[in-house]
Each structure stands twice: as structure tokens, then as C-alpha cells.
Length: 481
Image (cartoon, rainbow, N blue to C red; front, top):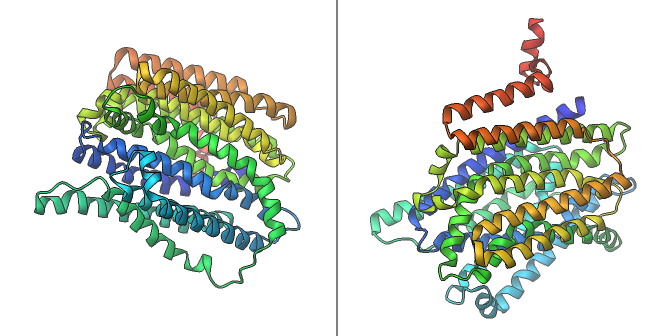
């Protein structure tokens, strides 16, 4: 139980920075949707470009984040040597990527549909290269249990980003009377990312850099299946936004993509929870892999993860009439995708939890197969159904893709690394959440939705999380007995 409390503490710190950060970052959504109308397609450009960025970040880190945690905790490996070898490797490949993009900027921009705006492409290329490099010192902070600095740097980036966006999209246009080009969103991102790099001075200096070729070879042998897994996984999140302008048959592809992208942002509260959990859970799992009770702990963690993601789902769909004001009214036609996207995010989170069986047993190739299968389903769904059903096909294809990967990982994992998950309890909570959602959709009342959510929380507290077992406030309830 103490291990779970430690995990909960780290998750709370990472989660606080992630949730506050994402909330602050949400301020950009109403800003962009207010200043860039749906008809202009400006937000569609942002959605499309950042989909490419997410994919490139996976390519440029090539599984080395997870590999770094694995080798730093391996017997016989020097964590400092692992760290410096990883840094040099990522820095070299990121620099090579930037040089290639700059050398072939014209054909690349034309292929992406931005022949008239090549600056969008090279600016984002430099930004994602810096992001890839920063992933390693950020991982070093996580490995060495320094969540405070990790959280502070993440929040610093977001605060600077918001401040500069307000300056260039609100303040300056107010005085000049001229609208700001969508490209400034990308220039601002580059400036903020570059600034954060200087904050890693202590993590990048004061020690000798050692590049161990033999070590790197072993690390790459471990990481390449994770790279394929990562590519397939990120395509599950971004393929729809990348493919949409190519497969949608209307002339307003960027307008429709912008509506879908803006509405999906409301569902991203689930992504906050997943990110916070991932930051704490990954080093926790590898650090605990030698304990005798590890499988029981993983099973409990899965149960509580599902409970809290279901609660997040109910809260978002229950208060969608309030949350919709995050985006401008001309984007509200996309709100119907929010519950679907959140279901897909829950499946992705479950799949992430399940994925540790092949990481701990060094069978990472299985992850590549699972994610690849899910990605194939998603891509086929987009290509086949987007021309007829538009962005609704994007949302349902995500559910199909994540669902496929999740089920494959569970059934194969039970053969190689069996864990007795509390399937009965999990199934009951799924049924309870489904019934709650049905009532919310049928009666569409904020008051009733609040009552339903309160009932769900009360049931969880009564059945699985009595207040006396909770950190901090638990002391008060134990003292009353």
C-alpha cells in the first residue's frame, strides 16, 4: 500500500502541473477559435501542423525515454553513462533532422500543402528537434525523483507561451488594427521551447560526457520495437488529423478539421490524467520490477486508474454545456465527438497500463504488433469512412484502433506475464458509468448530472476508497474513530 501511496504522491505532483498546465493551455483554444474563425481554416492549420509535430517527436526520440528508464535500473549498467550516451545520440539525430529539413524545405513544404508558407515547416522542425532533446533531461528529472523542477519547467513554458500569444493575437492587433497571421503560433512555440532548454544547465553540465557505442547498440536493440510501437501509437492519435485534408472530399477540409480539433480539446482532460499517470508510473514500474508483490500492485493500479478515468468521463459529459464555452460557437457542431474521443482515450490509458508486461519481459516487439494492428484499423477507418461521414469517422476510428490494441495486449499478456486484474470490479464500474451516462444523455439536466456524478463518487468512496484510507485527509477520519 505504501508503494501505491508513493505512486499517488508523484502522480499528484505531475498531475497538478499537467492539469494546471493543460488548463492554462486551454486558454489558447478560445483565443485561437475567437481570432481564427472556423471558416478561415486557421485552427485547422494549427491542428494539422501539431499532428505532424507529435509524430515527429516520436521519431526523433525513437523509444529512448523508456529505454533510458530500463537501462538506468538494470544491474551492471552505470546510470550516468546511460544518460550521457542517450543525450549525445538524441542530440545528433535531432541536429541531422533539422539540417535535412532546411536543405529540402521547398519540396517538403509543397508535399505537406504549405508551399506558400515554408516558414511554418522549418520553424516547427526546429521546435520539435529541441523538444526531442529536452525529453532526456526531463526523463532524468523523473528518474531522480525531482517532480518539482519537472513541473515548474512545464508550467514555465506554458505561461510564456500564453503570454506571448496574448501579446501577438490580442494586444498588438488591438493597437495596429491588423489580424495576426496563424504562423505566429508556431514562432512563439519555438521561442518558448528554446528558452526552456537553458533551464537544464545543471542537468547538462558538471559531468563528463561518455558516448558508449556498445551500450547504445544494446539500447537501440531494446528501443526499436518501442519506436515502432510509438509510431503506431501516435498515429492512433494523429493519423486522422494528418489524413483528413487528403481524404475529405469537400473544399472546406481545414474548416472541418478545425472544428473537429477544437471540439476534441474538450475531451483532453482525459489526456491530462493519462500524462500525469504515465510520468509517475513508468519509473515506478521499472523500479519495482524486482518486488515480489509487483503484479498485485499493477492490478490494483489498473483498477483505480479505470475508476478515476470513468469519473473524469462523467464529469466532462455531465458539464459539457458549460465546457463548450472553451471554444467559439462556430465550432460547437463538433461537440458530438467529445464522448467518443474520451472513450478512445480511456482505452489508450488501459493499453498503456497493460503495455508493461512486454517492457518488463523485454518482449517489446509485441507492443509494435499490437499498436500496428490498432493503427491499421484506425487508418482504414479514416480512409474508408471520412469521405462519407466526415470527422465523426475520425472519432469512431480512434475507438476501434485503441480497442484493438487494448484487447490484443491483454490476451497475449495473460499468457506471458499473467496478472489477476479485478475484472469483476472493473466490469461493474463500466456498467455503472454506462448507466450514469445514459441518464445524463436522456434528461440533459445540469442538476441531475451533478446528482449522478455525486452518486458515482459516493459509491467509489464507500466501496473502494473509504476516506480514512486517503492521504492527508485520511488522518482526520482515522482520528474520529
